[in-house]
Length: 376
Image (cartoon, rainbow, N blue to C red; front, top):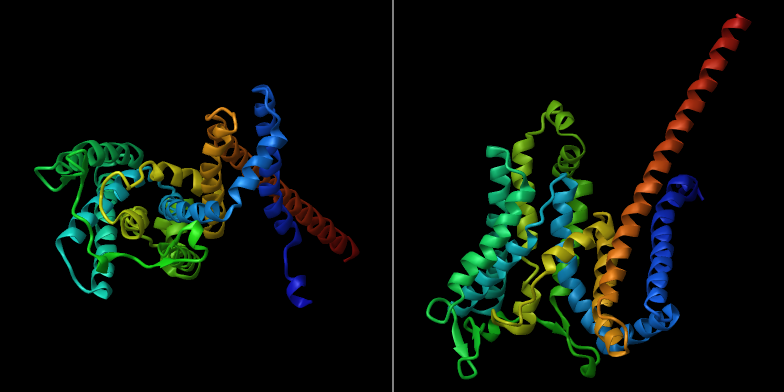
């Protein structure tokens, strides 16, 4: 009973109000959009739910959500520092490419090679993100500008140049497919097989869970996490308390890039086992939406990743059933917009409530003081 007595009921209700408002608003707006296209919204929702909860769909959703979750964590680390790292796309692209090159050239026992490849990916991602961090603290270049440029340099520059048959790749299937050397089986990450007909679950989901736990622990239970959150809230206050803000910016970008380096590894180590058409693109930008949906909280990011993967899975089936293919993109945008608006409305309401409460307490204290003086 004492535990429940210590719970701030008002804060708990405000915390629940935001996601509930967002869900209700997203459903209403989506229903209106579907009605405007001449479709029945409840039929669409039923199709999405029935198809999305099939066993093979569940495996697909969990595998895709693993990648989205890691991307969301990478973006969230920057958000907590008030840094907008939109370079996750280039960071994981560089990381998975060079990890595939290293994995194709070495053939070591699995307990050595797999950690080596994971460390390689994290190092490459950290270095690529660190460039933006150094530019920010040394030259004052906005990380938004630098990470956008680094995305382009990575994809259209370095990777496009090196990913050629006469450089670090080769052709297969009669010269139609370009890819890097296949990874040896010692570099294959384990999979989890439940229903054979549904396919295996990528074992990298375990790494994603561990990354989420580490993210929560570092931010909420360590001095470094406290300094990081302090810098994100007020750089001047952090400097006044003795925090080296420039150092924290660089370190945060390095950590964000290291986590981003893991994004492409489920596809590389669990599925494709080579760099080529099997490596997905665009996950870095999805990570921004997932981090916003999850409000930078590890559990919220996980829910956002699952929701985004669910919508990805059901989009093709909706189109097959006669719905416009753009409708899922509209749904995704509406959800993100509703979440951002709902949380901001609740945040402002909460601040207003606190201010009124403090004002009432000060007024009551002033009246009591005057009464005591009059009685004396």
